[in-house]
Length: 467
Image (cartoon, rainbow, N blue to C red; front, side, top):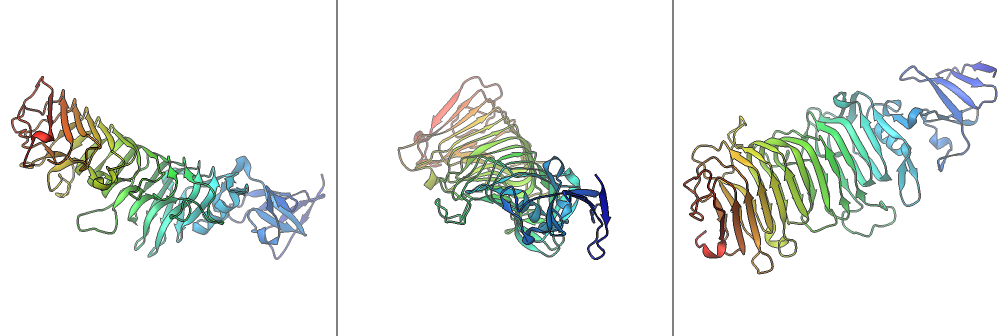
């Protein structure tokens, strides 16, 4: 096919038009690569094409004809648009195809290595199948200097998405409420108004996402109103600089739910290591699982607010952590939703932090369970500060509807303790210890540590007074 070379002097770059004008080749201003564009009609995947669509990146208009950029392997490179939040937003908006009630991502979005300056949230709304991925540690989404924003990624009514291989950060003087904020709709009503997302946020996965700097309140916030469930987090870690005088920033790595029994179901975490926040995980009316990884320089590893669903924590390493587990709001939640929690194969050391305030809880209560069943299996607790009295506390609802239990099986606590277990005297509860080496036959008086004690131990709070 014979092609004519046409120089458009005022509209660089150079266009190479084939004789039938079906294709043009253009030298990209950013990459200096030769890019192929193909002629299109007035629609593209249901999107009407007009002069408003001509962005000189994906769509061009030459001699009255519309052309669309060829997208190899269905991967959109954000740097085609630039390296800031507007560029990422343009890529997100382009890949989302309208299906009627919601949208579907037709292409993947790639963030090559480099720093992307963020000055406003990137909104991914009412879309299924979004795939946003970076080049690893070399890809940084950094909040602009002296800029405060609500979030970097705002996911509203987003489902089955995959987000992976990039980092968050913040330049000096910057901050955010959260790096990732995920919710559905207006955060108030389960029936959404016209114009709001028509689908829930569900089954989104996040892999190899971390922060290397930046001030945040809750690194990841998953709202508790409406349906926002079954997210999956793999090798995602967040680091902060919390201390007891800090009341605004670095409050949690993951905050899920709002404390009510909403349709939030379960969230799952694998190999997440959290450093320097007040609470690593806040499950507020939400369940899920945490497997592998661990934490250091943490006031409380897990906070439960108004129990709902089940929670499994397995194979985590905690050091320099003041408290493992605390149950808040239980006197309300337990009336309708008894909590069921299993902590297994936990390795805990109160030491390991250079900061004195990360050595054990001030009141000595290492685990406080509000009600329902707590199973503590195959775990080791060691290296407590000298003279510190460590306790496990069990409470419960003030009614006869639930029997609350703490089951300690196969655990190793190689220290001496007084009053290791505390049970509220009004709670219908029991502590059951089996095959563990921390128990004696003295009930609450657990002072004389006995190794290799062969008898199982059980007592009920109804026989105890004064605690």
